[in-house]
Image (tube, rainbow, N blue to C red; front, side, top):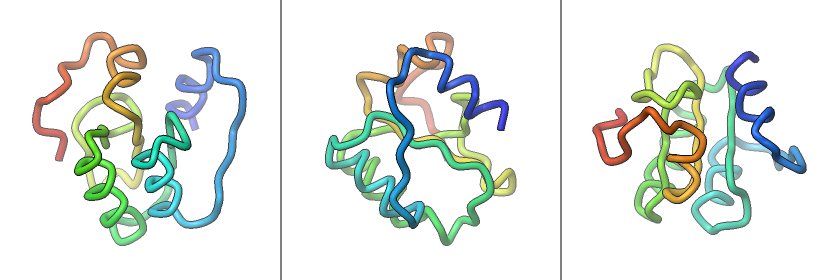
Length: 97
């Protein structure tokens, strides 16, 4: 929950989730959402969403901004413009998982 709290403390206006993790990640890819954070999903919950977000030019990573660690069961998806604002110390374009 601490990673989610860190993201929410950055002046976001609303929190929404519409069911499946992969579906929420598709909203990132389509530009409907700016950030999606989930703590607890299994890889099969977000694998398809990760491909779709990355193919749309977005970023999928660990909620701390680092490379996605599949065994940690936590994921953050965002667009490429917002990622550097959320995680200024992380290099975008590095291998994230």
